[in-house]
Length: 433
Image 1 (tube, rainbow, N blue to C red):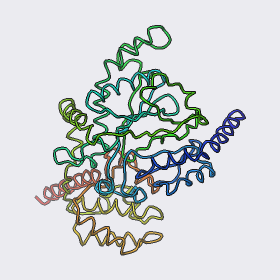
Image 2 (image 1 turned 60 degrees about the horizontal axis):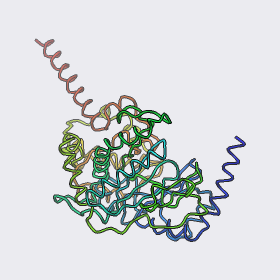
Image 3 (image 1 turned 180 degrees about the horizontal axis):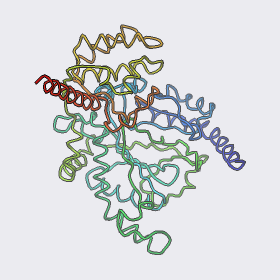
């Protein structure tokens, strides 16, 4: 414990000295534009979301409040401060103005990460991407970036900005597939000396094979020139021509020099790469590709809305909530619409629920949400594994988790009830006869 305390004190001292540098503040601030940013406090907790820098000086103010590193989104937003966990997919698409393609190389060994990074650069250049940003993660990996400007804004009448995280994931899998054979050969060659495990194929020693981390909505990564708490090294930008000679000691926070992580790119230079990746995915994984297509949800018609049909999590929400009123409203509106509930009954139930809340939502807010919902297509409520439920203190039961979504639960219970009612009617008819 004493050793850990000494290490923390050392890191905090370096942190203060490092982030006091005006060039570091400027680099972080410039990169943060149109991005959601989140400070981290000794990797114990993250700051509130969403957040953004208003001025370069904001960075050092957060450091004085014990922030040690800074993380940001790959997605580019019209206004990051408008982000909310209550937003649905359509609302996020409207707010998103683009996304950078980030390759996060994760490995147990730095030398293995270097091999994969070199292979990826070669693949990107083969498909016309001549300009790629490269930085040290701060530990044992690297981050590579292809800027938003390099991608076409539309493919087959589909807006590229709307296809996050689906298309970046496809790009990541395509690149990993293209690099696999050479990666195995080069790492096997390196490990034959007996210094590490002998890599015969991609699946065998998974703990040593470098991998690419798949992105998710509102995914965060360590900002260029942010510190890494465990190593006290800077996530510094590396010039591709000096990449082979890079060593972690070069990321000494008191010696690093500032370079742009976002390279100068030719507009649309990643078009061929994206098209090739999408064509590859259609052939390799047609079933998964169909899953990524945004299909219209068809409402289920449940004839009778008795209380026993509602899942336990929904019943708890309907009793009234203290926190998470807006998220609860979003869940209820989408559940009721997905179940085919009539407009009058839906609104009656919503307003009755609101009166049970510790502090009711303003009527004007509810009206606005209802109007917005009616103007858009029906979408199911969030799945149980989303943060919507846990975020308001509601933990779904094991039975609910098996159904994945509240509407699936209601459909199953409705069918069971119809079967039971039918059996009762048949037994009554038998008795009469």
